Length: 157
Image (cartoon, rainbow, N blue to C red; front, side, top):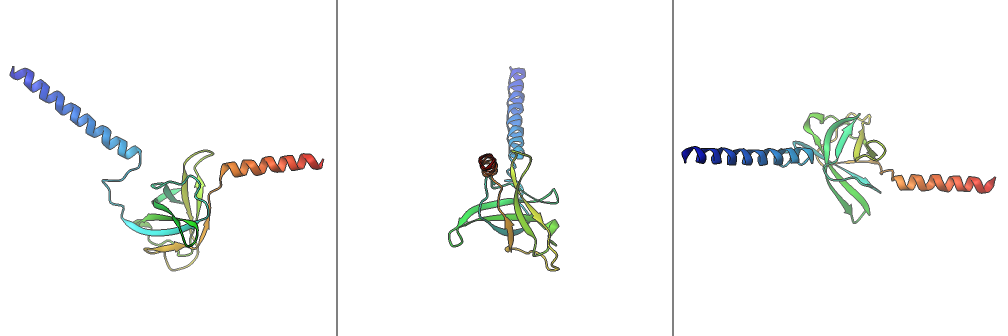
């Protein structure tokens, strides 16, 4: 009887540990950082079109991830998308005239914010705004323009 009871307890503990491991793995894969406090500073950029950019999307500089998108909302006064990004404290010396653009990883991959450093000596700080931004390139628009240009070229021949 005692032997059966200890086996049941061991199996129960194994199942609970497996569920906990599965939960942690799911959190890591989905890039949810509920257990980590993002330390760094917040930078804001305004874009005319964010395309498929999502919260928790990477923010990169030269292909290296330096932060994450923390919020996307519509600014009612500017009628543009306001993208809030948290940049890691390790990169606290980015020039204040740095620019941001929304890029796509691969042809149909996830979208991310790519930062290009400027040349000013003073650095971005908490609450700084990216003055130069480039909106997302929407694949449907590019294909539509290409088809329109091809059909316009066929008519002129």
